[in-house]
Length: 136
Figure (cartoon, helix red, strand yellow):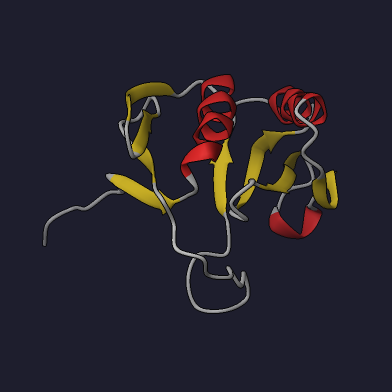
């Protein structure tokens, strides 16, 4: 049986919002692979790429219906989640679900934490930035 991995994900967006994704993901350490008419591609340090293509058709995104609920991006330190919160404040993107916060129900260790912030992009794509590991 072959070993598989995530190679890329494609999100349909309104082209006017491409700058939001570029700024957010480069802030989080991703590199731009492609930026041109109809699309934006970025890659993380592990080789996974995210592509933002458009224009998207007018359709509602129901997080609790079939399909993607949210995209979680892991960061190496709890302070990176807090830095993301500061970044979101600067670009006037509200956080969701009383985040940032620790989620003890998602860890089985008293010394570790699951610390997250959740928010929605201009195209109504729900994101999570999360740190898992020793509590700071």
